[in-house]
Length: 504
Image (tube, rainbow, N blue to C red; front, side, top):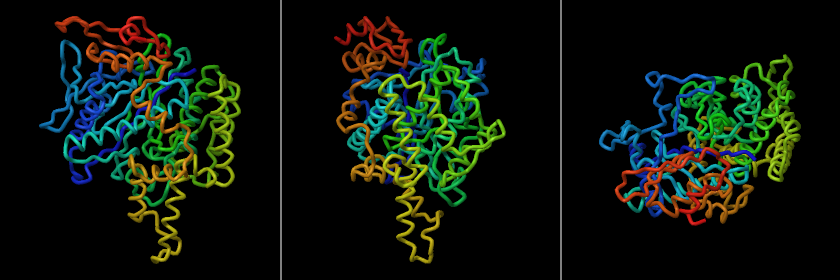
């Protein structure tokens, strides 16, 4: 069992006023979320956050850190339309309109210029799908409440690029044994992160960070990866991020923060993104030397090579001097990971992994129900062919504005093309609508998210703040005595004090 979680930053726009301030809209959306939740929410506890600590054994100076790294405190100034910092009683204060800790154990908050849903800790790929889709449902419910309260609309997009050179993230988090040397972890994991985009990519019209070259590629994030290893998340983005912020017992755990992945609207892509990476991490923790044969010679360049290789035939140079395609590397990883399947959930991942690789290696479009970039390419291909009579015998060129518009509308929450395909039965769903609806207000029951979400749902009057590894209680009428409950074991779903207060 591995504890995992997914964070998603949504694109946000006012369709009636495209120049509207995204930070202000995001702030108001969080306020709307709190209203939707019936005020059964909490502010955020920044006490245990340390975003400048590096897995390589040093801490970045705060003075030299870029703004994106300063995630441990923020305040929104509505008059200025910007985020600043403020201290309260010696610690960073969280203004209520910037954060909502929810009854399902998740955090919905303002991350710079985006609303972000950070899902609760879960213990498997299926649950990752359920609570990730629950985040989309929470975001849509918040947008509906926003329209009711503000008298204006917001549209939300689950994608990673704005078409103007900016990229925003969808991050995965995996609990890893700290006994594994970080250099070995990064080296052995990199081939998987580079090549898994063949089934996790969401698809993108345009090549280059600004889409300056016509074309289509598998991944939305590929052109923004510029380093092998690093602490940054918005500048010189690395394949392997080095932030050392475990939100758990530091002597036992690492939290691997993965920033290379796409935002996915297809269940199978999310399922495989989490499930395959968890199994590869198990192989790394077991010090499986078979992984060493897959080390890449030029991994940063290979990210873009794989993303643009729609025929899945490009050969990547290995450190050994040999070469392999992305599919061959994934098949090798699959065989290695068969040794580390320990339960029915792992077996389901292996079966789905094998089946998708077979379909991708045969008739590409046979994978369109499961692989998002393939479904998008198929839909765009139909649009291109439909307009072949407009002086383009091969169909619309990839730099036609209509293709870029459809690419954007694919990811719109609620009624985008991905949602329409799913509603029409053209996308394989792994989680039912009932499961997702329940997960918007109920936390996973096998991690500490049960305690965080449960106390927020049952006794919000007692919760002063909550974080990933803390719940701060205020049980005194004068609000002068705060009690910090530490939850340093992510897989521990029980705590005597919190269970008593929750009533379970």
